[in-house]
Picture (cartoon, rainbow over the protein chains, first blue to last red):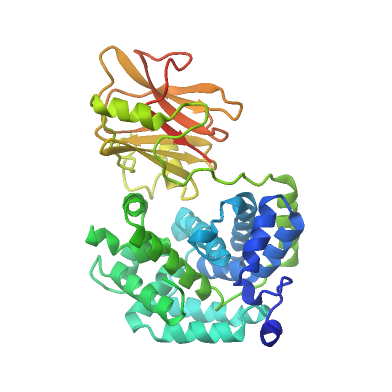
Length: 199
Length: 239
């Protein structure tokens, strides 16, 4: 804890918002505890907003979506099921789904023809704002990403950060239809195993 | 089976289209391995979000907390997303459903708007109400199995409507119709339409679905009734 505390802005003492305490805060939020919810927000808003920005790119829309996400988190906190995984994964799944929904709803209008690499770099630059990018975690995640084959990394990146379907990913990467989903799955398996996520 | 299994990664990170999502969610119900795999992928994906955090403007925090002050958190789910039959007010529908199944009612499912009048590819036109419901990935989806077949209810709070999707549903008995009901929070049964006499269908329920706590299907005299005359043959419990 001490060794990690300098990395963490999380009032609960939960480095990067990835630990158990988020689950406790959600439980309190489900009972209507606004202060607990404020702490959920503080612990996770940079991750959520960073993800949304990365998927949507449009700052004004991203703010709207981030707001919607937290409203959903507040409303549905009681639905978080600890047996299904971490509170962070639950929350980020909501966030990602909302971001992707918005992208699909808006389709071409807000999306530019950017490559995954451009997106990657663009957003990585404003990554400094949040100390919750625990350097250790980020290092571990980067290493895991680097362990993927190039096509796995591109496929996972386009799907997750680009909000593309696997069929679109196949087209973007000139893969035969039906193979992108396999690349995505293989990539996620490797990421999961490299990052030591229990499977 | 093995082919659909390969969709677990794309599904976990929302990289599937609507049809694939529905198909995979059906698959998940009978495949705990895929369920666990999806959960583990979501854990991994959540960690990826640590790479590029971006603090939202301070004003957003105020807006979010203001939202919380004015919105009531939902109660815990007392049923999992998928159940067979259920309770509230309406007795063990499973028993009723099983009895009906024994006399030949089978309900199957196809979760795409194949019967929507507009059809098409969904990109260059406005969506029908049914499509809006089915397109809402935040919608409540409850599948009920009767015999070897299923019916799916999709309720979108965003759209305020609900859609019932059935496949291979045998016709109601002679002189009878299937009628759909919303259960209101107060426990009242509100008519939501009589199902067309076709086996495969996507039915947009009549009326506002936002507050419904359950949806039931009963067998009624032809044309429907003002109140359900018996226990539902299928009950979809909503959170």
